[in-house]
Amino acid sequence: MAEKDYDNRMHTAEHILNSVMNRMFDCGRSFRSHIEKKKSKCDYHFERALTELEIKSIEAAVNEIISLDIALTEEFVSGAVAETNYFIGKLPPDVGDNIRIVKIGKYDACPCIGPHVKSTGEIGHFFFTTVDFENDILRVRFKLE
Image (cartoon, rainbow, N blue to C red):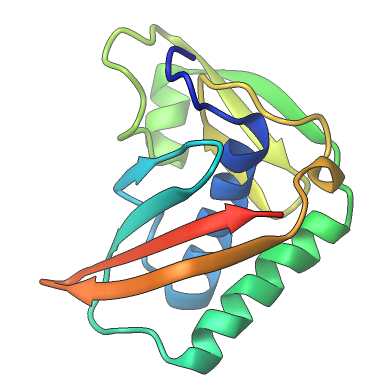
């Protein structure tokens, strides 16, 4: 990818975070994100602020999946299959009809054109730096150690 601070570990952590957020809150994947090596952020359509307990629970769930050292796999599907079964809103318009689905075991499957780690064990420890809620948008900023 072209972004100079792009980081495979951070990008894969974003996939796991999106899966955890959707499983816990049925909020879908982030509609906007900015992924960099030092820190990253994701924005979700949400109805309220998170509690401290929820924040800790999200971090724990993400770190649990990371600790399982799951190998990432991929498969290719048609554009129609991808559109029916996955959120394709972040794919570029010229992606074509052969869509790569990146899978993290039973925890996540997502269309994606970016590079990732080979296994979740490469990611490191995930934690939030800030969590804000304003105008029905939940913004989480996170880092890896």
